[in-house]
Amino acid sequence: MKKEISTICLILLCAMSLQAQKIENLKIAVTGIVVDSVSGKSIEYPTVALFTDSLKLLKTVAGGVDGKFVIEAPTSGKYILSASVMGYTNSKSEICLEVAQKRVDIGKIAIKEGLQIAEVTVVGIKPLIKNEPDKLTYNLEADPQAASSAIVDILRKVPMLSVDGEDVVRLNGETNFKVLVNGKSSGMLVKNFKDAIKAMPASSVKTIEVITNPPTKYDAEGIGGIINIITHKKTTNGYNGSINAGVNTRGGFNAGSYISAQSGKFAISTNVYTGSSVLHESTYFSESENYMSSD
Image (cartoon, rainbow, N blue to C red; front, side, top):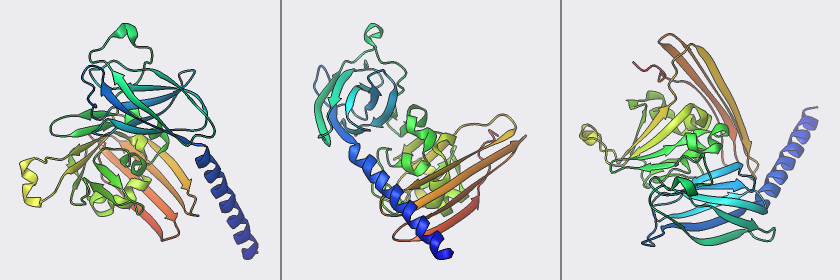
C-alpha cells in the first residue's frame, strides 16, 4: 500500500513538473531601457508595467540603476507596456509578441519629465521604487504579485538585494546587514531570517526599505546596511492568515502558512514552513513578536 501511494505521489510530482516546464516555455522575456526624452540619459529604478490589450494589469517590475529592465509576458499576444517614474509622464507602448520569440529587446523607452495629465492614458500605476539619498523603498502595494507571494519572492526583485538558490539574502553582495520590522529589532527574523521570509506572506507587508547608510548608532555593530520591513498596521481586533505552496522543475516543493491575531494591544503571529529540494529538506516553526501595535 505504501509503495502504491509513493508511486502515485511520484507521478503527481512529475506531472506538476512537466506542467511547470510547459508554462515556463511559453513565457517571453521583454527587455529594454528607460531614458529621459530630452537628455537621452537612463533613468534610475523605473517602474515598468505589462498590461493586456484591454488594460488589465499583469505584472510590474523595477528597472535597475541603469534604467534597464526585464519583464516576462505569460505567452504570445498583444500587450501594452508602460514605464513610469515619479515626476515623469507615463509612457504607453503597444507590443505584439510571437510564439517563436523567447526574448524581445524593444530598445529605448523615452519618457517626458513633468506630469501632463491630458496625455496619461494608463492609470493606476504606483511607482515600485522610491529612491532617496539615504534609502531605497520598494512599494509592495504597487506589485500585483505581492498578493500571492511570500516575502522571499519579493526580495528577489528589490534593487541592491539578491537571493541565491539556497534562499540566502545579500545586500550589495554582503550578508552583514541588520533586519528591522517597523523600525524595531526583530529577534525572530535575526535568528531565522532565511526560513521566516519563506512563510511570511507579502500581503502582510506594505513596503521594504533598504538603508545602505545606517545611522551612527549602528556603527559599533559593523553592519553594512539595514533591511526594514514595514508591515500593515492593525488597528482592530481579529485574526487573519494565509497559505502558500509551490513546486519547481527540480522536483522540490514548499508550503507555508501565516496566522496572526490581535486583541487590544496584545498580538501574536505564527509562521509555519516546510519544504524539500534535491539538495536538502527542512521543517521550520516559530512564533513571532508583536509588530502590529503602534505603541
